[in-house]
Length: 89
Image (cartoon, rainbow, N blue to C red; front, side):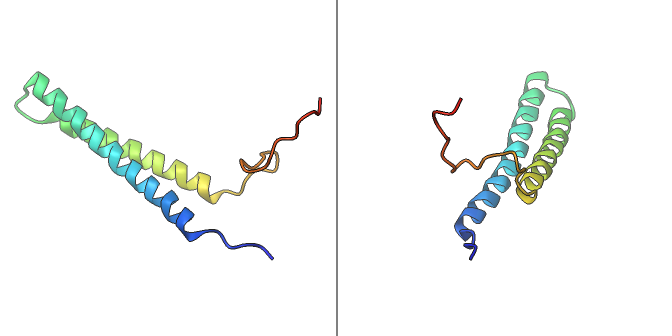
């Protein structure tokens, strides 16, 4: 009988992805704001450009992470919890 996955582990995995998504956007907007303050333009082009780049990067990371979670493990990969065999050369 296969054991059911721990729901808390799934919640933390997906909440981590959500927090990364928000962090990408916040960091990009902060960088854009810093660019705008430094250059003092009449329009907020730095915030606009960096927020678009941040959203694009966040979406790329989101898609990449969800593909990793949905794909089955490859047969040649050993699970992280499996003990390594020592002494074989």
